[in-house]
Length: 466
Figure (cartoon, rainbow, N blue to C red):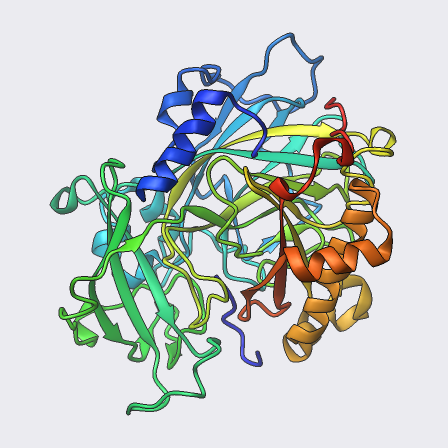
């Protein structure tokens, strides 16, 4: 998901699991969770360590429950106090809450104490009042012991599950919202009247995992909304607005007969950048953040360059499904629980491995390596003191494609020992480049290189994990 401001693993987890994924893909059913492997996970610890301890012979598993005290709204920061401290190989379950729950409060917030408390806002008080310049509700941060600038943090996405509605009227269901909003790429290219317009579409999912699709319930055109502080919002220009259903016209006949396959993923997850104390959660960059790549799903692995001690990992902006580009403004924004495993790779161990030279967000899936390019690889550094405002004015796909292709070139040269000419030939005939998103202020292009085209002897080994 994106902006509200004007201006604009697969690590081998076992043959059985791998076969399950392949068969699921072949028959068109992608598992909604990794319930089959959850039994192998360590039990969740009852306490959250807040300081580093000596690693044990087996990993631990912790859980961060969503609450006003465990989320930070609209920003990443190197100054946040960590909520849990883990060692390499440990697991953390994170409950994440969507910043779009107010689009249909009855379905997406009511009856859920955590969401209700996070969204609590009256004329006299706002529970989460310390908000950054961005929009996303992020859970964390997680401090990884031993992580230092220059290291690489491997984050394995073990499981993702939509959060069930807390309203008894919708038991067993989960809901999400898609906003066709003013920051969407199509906003100034509408055909039908009224022009311009913003439209919210509410989607329903089966929270039990028995069905792997989303269906539209209804849509409505945004109308001006007044928040408890008395501010009138003519457009969707502030996160957490609770829409008064009496002010909108619900259109039930919406996408009848259409089922959207679930592509569960976290739109925003990453580590804290070092360049500023408070960093807008909207534009992605070298530290990850709001990348909005639908491929970052169950069973995949992300690698992030560590910029500050402990890495300080946070996640949120969960998506039930999204297409490449995130064209109209958002994905199907929903609340979701995720299980992640953290593996630390020290800088000294990266030389001579496939991860040598990786200083950007890198995705590994069962079938491919995916590099992430942006208009600016590090906009915070490149644009100076006004970076967090200027990035919205300067985003373009041309430099994003150049950055993505340069990163893939370097990945092939370092990890596959190719010459530059070999790398560019292979990229042209064997790789795919796709638009990640055009709505986040630092536009993205990701390059996809299939693993199956390489002979094993041509691929450098992975680094050992600390």
